[in-house]
Image (cartoon, rainbow, N blue to C red; front, side, top):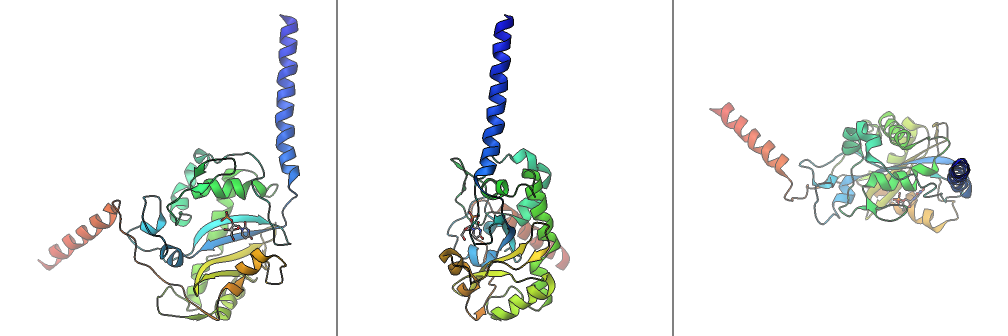
Length: 273
Ligand code: U2P
């Protein structure tokens, strides 16, 4: 029995060691990142392409979203590449339960298809972003909660929608803004050059970048040698760009809107009686 116990404890020890060794070797397999990209999406551009609705889709809310929403916080290399899926720490929604109201409001999926997870299967956008990018932001970001809390903090601290509004750049279907005007507005307030991604002249993404101590820094620019970044640089935007709005898509889950408009009508009826 004593022998068996000894065997069991050496087996347990070997097992624990192999787990910790394999997870640290995952860290070691991709070198530490250089800087952060905070990627924001413009729902007006993305929702205009969304063809159908689902309850988890931000495009299907009763009111159109007229502020930049979060895409993700990415750990990138200076050469324009990035590590991905660095550990096997799978997304656990329970760990971010307390952040849910903010995540739902500011970090909704704008697509109906669920997102790819690192080691098989699909999940919400948060699972994709944590597993693909968050697990690579060690040692600055320590765990899943830290990843989402840090991202929400940066998003709130550097309110890009407000910065643009203060510069007279608003969500509008007909207005066109000079690309240089948009870049300068961000640069003046944020202190570093952003990167814009456009689709047919509409802003699809706006990215701002940070050093590892979260001080603002310029995003990787067009001089990058990578095709991926060249196609995704501000050069994908024409000289004049827009921040369009959209009509919320209608689906079976729009009871919120019906209730609101019914109650508004009721209020009007009462008020006019
Ligand atoms: O641009 C297409 C997708 O590539 C990933 N990306 C892009 C630029 C960058 O600096 N870092 C980066 O990770 C993003 O992948 P996703 O998170 O969407 O899977 C981006 O959408």
